Structure formats: structure tokens, C-alpha cells
Image 1: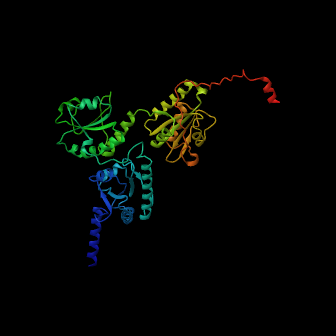
Image 2: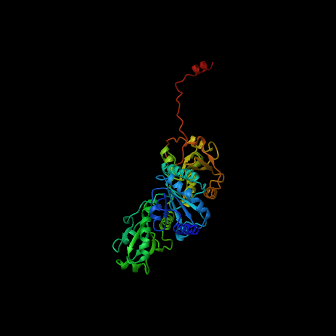
Image 3: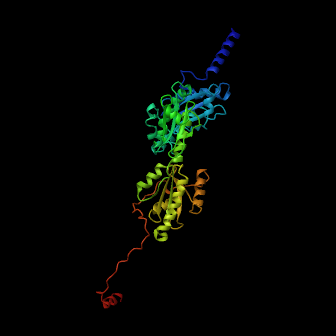
Length: 439
């Protein structure tokens, strides 16, 4: 019985190796290309996903702790596992090169974060709860995920993909103001059938993340053959990008939901108008701009009596050019006249001299960075470029809270005027009385 028993154990081990580390009775879900999109990417829940290889010793040691953490987090955060040996395409999609690799699919499902914590069940739970608290805090503050984008993808439905025909194509696509990604398909095409759930799932995320400025459409090329001939469609599916005033371009990117959404966001960023440069005239303008954007760029410009209208417009034009240059960033742009918002200047360590000045404020972290160079296109570009790559020095906002903003009259675009002094009539004052008072 001994040798036979050993063989049975070996056979059982081999069976488990082939079929993965987890079973239906575990709280860890086995994930594959067939269920990953629906279970993870379209889910409202935060997911931790382990990419493992059955032959990997570290993966084998992680398994009991991964199961234990999944049970502890049940109903709060979901834990999954991908056999990367069996599902190489799914592992390749997320750049998996070592095992086990754990990814956090949280606020932005399109850009999961690497889990860097410990590998015990206790460490996994603690690290997960930290990530979850961060996600909840971001949602409370109105932030929905990376580059100004929503982490929630929605479930998607066919109604989110616009059905395009010979009758409505020109009106919606060619004469509309949106950017379109259009799939030309044939109902009998196997590759089209594989693309359909990805295209459908991507449609609602694209609608939300681009505020409806990028749309996904579909043309049945076997029915609307005129459209197919017009754009030289010879294979299925063919995806083309239509931007107003430009020739259509072929889309040659990936055919998964994340690939499609990423392309749509890139198209949106390239076509989005530059943000407005707003004057800080009340609390609402300041709070709304700084709360809604990753950073708010605030300039304190010299008093109008020091520059006149032409000088001020020169500074504002520099800001508008920089806002356009960095329009792909989720940044808000504000300005105020020197002395009009004293508390704001004080909280940023400006105040009293050195105008014009500029600061970049991160409200979520309550930190800011000051422009040290010249208030010019070159100086501001260097300042913002350093911030973009994490090289800028930062300091905490004084007091740790947003300063009080006073309501002021908006600038009327004109040169400033000195206050008019009131004329004093001294004709009825007797000098004798004044002399007596002085004595």
C-alpha cells in the first residue's frame, strides 16, 4: 500500500498542478480570458488578482495565505487568481514577467497598480484595506481615477454602441463634433463575434471618461455595403477613427476593452479644448477648480495700476498658452490680483512682493510648489515639466486647509484708475478759530 499510496498522492498533486491552485469551494475566483472582463473590469468592486505559475515555489507558498485573505475580505474586496502558464495572453496584457505578481484593480481598472506589500494573509489584508481607504477617499473628494479619468467602467450594453447606417452615418459621424471609433463588421465573422463583448464593454467607459466627446459605433458592412465601399473595407472587423475635418485613420491597436478605452482617452485628450484661465472672484470658483482637478495652477498677478490692461493681458496670454500646452493634464488654471486674496498668498508663502508669482496646489495632499524661474513660457514650462515627472520640490499648505477666499469684483478688462480724492470746501472755516485750536 505504501508505494501505491505515494503514487496516488503524486497523481493528485499533478492533477492540482494542471488545474490550478484553487477550487470552487475557495473564496478565490479562478480568472481567465473568458470571465476576466465581466468579473473584474466591469465590476464595481476592488479586485486583487494574483498571476501565478503552477511550477512556481513562491506561488505554492502564497496559496494558503491568499485563500485565507480572500475569506477575511469576503464581501469587501474580491481576490482572484490567473494561471499565467495556461492564460499567457492575459498575463501578457498586464506585462507579467515574474511569479507571483499581484495587481490591484481599483479606481482605474485600465491601469491596475502593483501590490508591493507582504505575502502573509495579515499583510495582504492590511495592504488591501489601505488601498480601499484610499479609493473611498478619492471617491468622496470627487476624484475617479488616473489622467482625469473614471475608474468605474460600468457594465456596458449594446445601446452604448451607436448603430450606424447609410442613412445616419454622415449626419452623426461626418457632420458631428465628436470623435468616432467605428467598427465595420460582418455577422458571420468569428473575429467580429470575439470583438463584440469587448467593444460593448468599452462603450460605456468611453462615454463616461470622455464626457461623450468620443463615441463608439458599429456598421454592419453586409447590409450597408455603400459605406463599406466608400471606406475601402476588405476585411472584418475593421476599425476606423473619424475626427472632424480630418481623413479617417485605421485603428491598429489591441482589441481588448482596456486597449480600446486607452485609445479613446488619447483621442479625447488630443481634441479637448484648453482649460479656461479663471479669475478667483469667490470661494466657489476656487474650490470647484481645485477640487475637480489633480492640480490647480494659481498665479498672483501684479496690481492693475502696476501693469495696466496690456501688461495684465500679456501675463494671461502666457498662462493660456501653457494651459493649452498642458491640456492633456487634469489641471485647473486660476489667477488673482495681488492683495485681493491675502490669505491665499499667505498660505502659499507669496505675499507682499515678487509679482507675478505662480504656485501649483494639490488639494488632496494639501501641498504646493512655487515657480522659482521666470513668469514666461520657458520658465513656466520648465516648472510644470519638473512637476510632471516628480522633480518639483513641494511644501505643505500653511494650516493644512484651503484658505478663505474673498468675493471680489471681476476685472473689467480696463486699465486701473487711482481713487478720486474728495474735494474739501474750506471757504467757511475761519482762520482765527484754527489758530486758537492749534494753540
